[in-house]
Length: 229
Image (cartoon, rainbow, N blue to C red; front, top):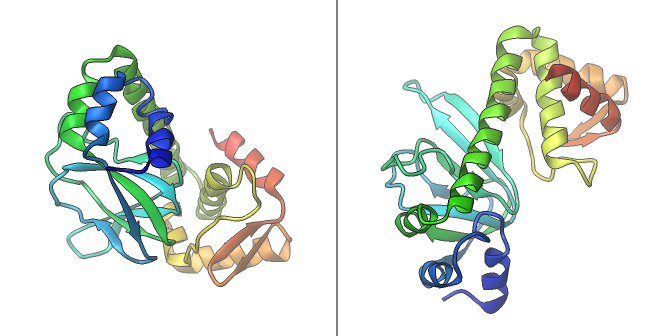
């Protein structure tokens, strides 16, 4: 059984607040609290999709591989987020692998019970549809970024998305992002990312040291994101 403070945190989370108290209490009886160090796998692509994950502290990377063992998909989950929403009410297995990119603390929620109780609450279903719509809109933007813009613009747009998603209250991405990861996010080569990063550093728009990104000119990146929509 989770601690009282954890119970209150989860109960007030938007993903659970619409559940009836008796239903949430039954769900809470099987919620587990876990800790994982940086680099540890949280779940593998192909594993049975029997738990949802609510990040309490830390950040996770979501990745999918193609048949050549190269990344074909890359994204991040941040603190206070529930994932994966993809496959809700449908899939029997996870579509991707999740790995801790910092030390993480998280809750695991039984999928079958969550989906069962969600079906009984119209407001809960609306919340799930709304979250899926936000995820779809985000990935539509990433797809357009990957197919329409030039390589340099794709790198800047990828950085802008990171800035918007993780730097509302800070100036830096709170976990390491390698140039290989940036190349996957921007659908370009590592060499192109290196050149763009070098130019942005010279223009004093970012600082990039030991894979840590600091935005020195957040306005530039946020305006770039807005113009890219």
